[in-house]
Length: 353
Ligand SMILES: Nc1ncnc2c1ncn2[C@@H]1O[C@H](COP(=O)(O)OP(=O)(O)OP(=O)(O)O)[C@@H](O)[C@H]1O
Ligand code: SF4
Ligand SMILES: [Mg+2]
Image (cartoon, rainbow, N blue to C red; front, side, top):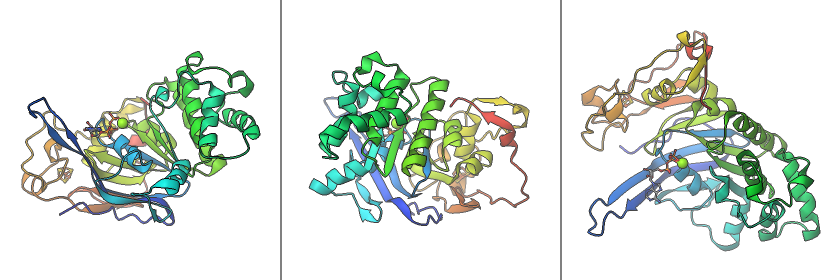
């Protein structure tokens, strides 16, 4: 049975992914040996609410960046559709595509990807205004100064005529954010924007992203492998494993009370500090993966210690509601029984953001 959308109702979604798949083919050697078919996303369905900070969480290779690239239309899905404000953007072209590119912006992990080392900060941040023919060119400098101030590069006059190599990594990432928000997008995809920064710079970037949401009302999709970062920043998270959505729900709730063995394994793997004696060790990850017996079973079966072989290796799980607005794709996910007790995981703070 193909994956079904999670049974979570989002009123007035700004973005909907409807059974989106992306498949890559790698070439292999000159004889074609080693060529592979990689299913980076497998029928991923998500609804993202207007003004949310929504986290896409998963380990390396789970498909997070692929989802981001499809959303900003750097790539097209092989199956399924993506809707922005109800309109299908999967095959946009021409002017409509240009308009979409203004409305949906991306911040990359490495700011050098979006900043030309030969171009000054002023020209770099003004470029999207020129490309999108926004405002009078005489106003561009004013707008650039304004947006540099928003991302905490102040006094902005000290930065406009510098070049990327004259900035620290944290400052470069702020410029990349300024460049993305200068056109006032409704949706910002931030792909691991702090993974190359130390903890104090990361916290500043998180606060800038929250400021962008607060001041501009933008919706933010925050891509991260760090549950600690997701806990700090996100309203809701979706946990992805090998391109399959595994669990979805409010960030604080999912992290305090994860229902899917994969989410539990991610929490076990997260560095912690504080009263850690209270943290449950879920122990859901097999130390050595087992053989998958076919395509029909649970995607996490090869690594899941909780698996029941006959059921989990043969039958794709259904969604199980697990708490308010939370659901997990596991045969054995249990709903909360509503005793209102905070989960023990909350006593110990996740580190490693
Ligand atoms: N252009 C490509 N050609 C072939 N395979 C690709 C390509 N891009 C991504 N993949 C594969 O698709 C899968 C998902 O990759 P993706 O970059 O989306 O993961 P990710 O969750 O962003 O990982 P990371 O946390 O390391 O950034 C991986 O197996 C990756 O090797
Ligand atoms: S369905 Fe089975 S294999 Fe999959 S996560 Fe649940 S227990 Fe593990
Ligand atoms: Mg990535």
